Length: 410
Image (tube, rainbow, N blue to C red; front, side, top):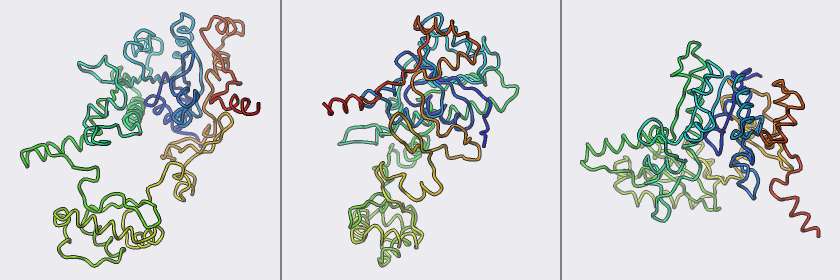
């Protein structure tokens, strides 16, 4: 099945997560993505033992890689040729780097009038628009980090959700521009800040603080990520597994008590009462869960209609029946390893083509793309010789595994 963006070409100048995640989605929707990388490659190619990280493998599969030195005159000319036949340019370069390498909307629009352009940056319009920001900076600046603490110290969440949300918002912006056949330059010039993305994600919490400030006279925040709801959170079963329970309402509480074989205490019937006696409720729930195996408890909870799931480690997530039937991931090879990479979940809009393609080696498609663009062989050889472009080195020992095996054999 072809995706909704079949026939569209995207140029990505991306590093780390935000831009590569956005173009990953566009590729899953059927677009052809050409990943333009500098000599040495983008950052995530070197994060794990000197080789590609999970980020690179998960979000760059199915793309073409061309290695260009945009700081050279000839590399910049190759980039211009690529822009001339592209539909979309998407990048997360710093504002200064984008201007220096002539990768701005104005530069690309002059080459390809009507192009859709998206720049994911640290901050949108405003006094900090030139500053650089990353995912944890966005978390810190928008209130997310304040309540997420490790040993009392504000800490990042772990996964780079702000980068990924920004990638999703970028896709929405690109699709909205493509949907408008008469899109103005203003609509096609999409500028998206991680900071502004973080503000939108945090809207519920920020408005909630305002609400409580006006009701109680002080800016109260939830004391825990579980919203101070007793019976809401992770609890350990008798066999050492963890189960996550969601009890927001009185009906949730009633169903849990039924499943756990607990008598309904009228003093704990309402949420207000349970919040008042939170330590008591937490002890009741903890004891009930600890007194049962995960298998027995999950069977009873499912029968009673209680919301729950097991808290799984990353190595077990894709073993779950819901993940496997039908498969929510694609099996692909990269270097000497095999990976199960989760797919974009909107299957009705996505493409089956290219899903099993490995992430590209650095510059793997450089020569092929130039040939397709009409470059003669002697010109390609010249560009390679002067370092304006680079091709792939298939013998690269990406994670030093070959070297280590050789050393061990000695």
